[in-house]
Length: 84
Image (cartoon, rainbow, N blue to C red; front, side):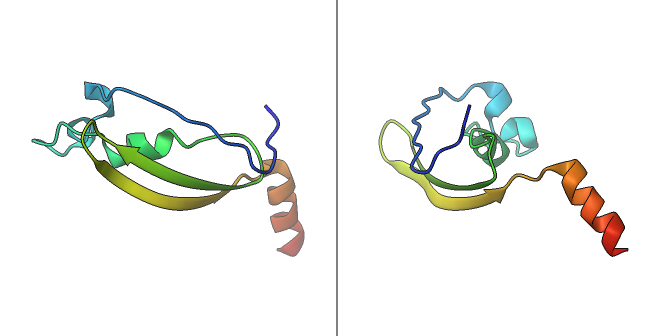
């Protein structure tokens, strides 16, 4: 999928046990774990800015923004070898 400026997506998921904070070692918290939440934001491209609004059935539970850069690994490593 090509990444274009202004691309938007809406993802709806029901939190299951493997996505819970308990699954990430936080006993007693059967809610969406932060690693699972961040995992929903992965996509292909170069520079990406994500705005996130998450809510349960009653109210908002998280809001934030995250900026990511995807790296062409061979190109990156070639530059590091040249710079010593």
